[in-house]
Length: 81
Image 1 (cartoon, helix red, strand yellow):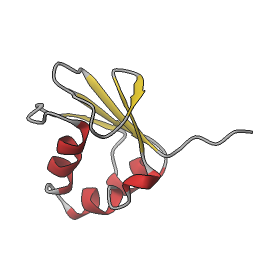
Image 2: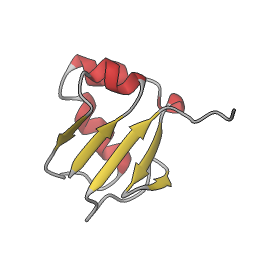
Image 3: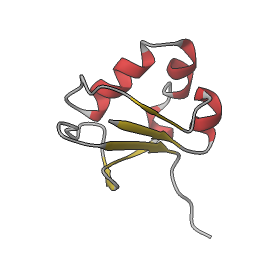
């Protein structure tokens, strides 16, 4: 599965994207898996209220299933302008 990071998440993690084997059932499970990898992930995902997620380019919530997904994207909330 491809994981994409945008804006300050990309800066904190130090990667624009990466490929991971999906061992998670939900987005929240994936975040827990990422947090356990290294401190930079734990810092990036410390405040979930400041993060939005899309699974296969569909905006969703952290309890959404990612079984069979090919892409998960994390980004800060969008603002109008």
